[in-house]
Length: 279
Image (cartoon, rainbow, N blue to C red; front, side, top):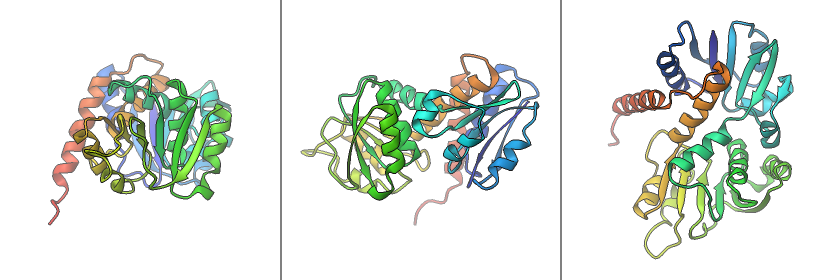
């Protein structure tokens, strides 16, 4: 059986390492998982070539929203979030799921947080929409969102309405409330200046989830850890969402999480060793 991760750019993806390790640990001989460069324009043609030899697809940006019209069935969670990161081929149909949300919930639980008192999200894109759904699953009905461009927050606000969540939009760079769960969904470097605000005699988050996994730790994650906050990273999110994808695509539970974790950490260490040290 075949599976793959699609996106653009995609060469950096850690997903093939995680899924291939899982196949080996689960004894799934003959299963393969690759990375395929694919943009929104090429998605319909590519997905049309997936026959009964295909188990499923993982989708990264910019395909999570673009895939929705191409699906035969979409789980309610993916519809509410406004994006599917997983396609499972079953009975000649394409079924769409969102595993970012349960992946985020599990990553935060692993960091010791299951019931946040309040939350702030940095960013207003597709991952921020998944963060809203994760907060709802953890019992919150409201969140503060720091948007880099509030005029482009329409998809997030629409997701909030479907999720029955209340959102307070604030300018990017606003102060984070003391004791908040802070979820950064912005690219590497974009949240660095928030790190300067975390520390002694300053409001500090209770827990930080930074969805960046390379380079790691980010300045935000380092500052949060020094302040005493619990920290979850992008690798934790990637690992748990991939585990759920594997369960959906293979119909086997539970996924071999520790084998996937070890393979992913080993690959990240290998990549870090190849990165030249700064001058």
